[in-house]
Length: 310
Image (cartoon, rainbow, N blue to C red; front, top):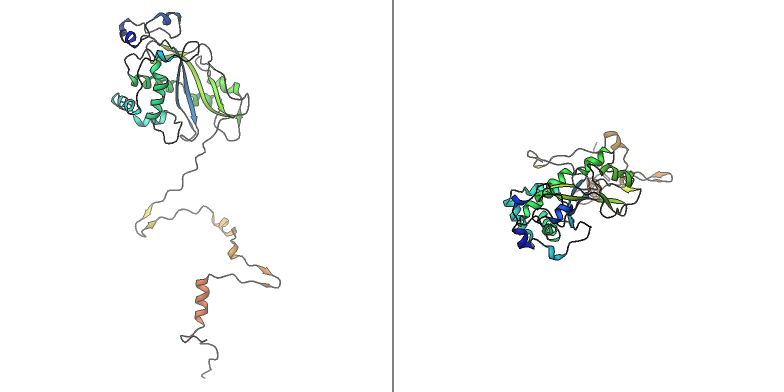
């Protein structure tokens, strides 16, 4: 199939063909994807950014009936993450921007490892990438991600991250059903984690339109959906170095003066034992010093028995 696909010329392709249409199914697979149903996945990462962030989780490449394509439809070869990273770098990708845009499913996993999985499981099944240009696949997904501002659409409907407010499934779906999209929502327990947008491809690759109906089923409850806030602890107060005292500068005390006076410490409290109160305990170092004041250099009490020399 790859040889047949590679023989097609872009000049012979209709740029307005929409995948899964009757005309697209008859066209050369290099002109429009024949596994033409794409489900774009965004994953919510609550600890990314100030208020969490929706990142690219990947794309599912499906047949027009929603089934997975057969292995015989693989248009391009498998690639390692080193090969993918090298090709994308030569194509002018900004690594920092890519790291921010893509969700990381495992701690410490770099964007190139995420790309490797996305390309080898789905990207190489897109028949219209007949020249093996892997960078075109990831560039198209990056542009698609920008065109689906899930955070903004939810915020416009007053759906924001919260530790004590939950939401209805119908309200979230309504907020995200913009521009004709029919997304499905996916939860872990009752926590919102992913949104899936079913799409069709217009032309070769790079333009997308909403699929005419939803694909798959929601896995979120009807109500009580949690849109979680960040769990990141606040950063500690930064310290600078005092060059005069040769030590870190003093950090501000968190308690006010009045509050600090109200704090009682067990070692400073006097214990009431009937008629007599115990004196405050002194540290061993200072109690030793007090005893030393009454001792002469020969070990006896200097003041005991001192005579009046008058």
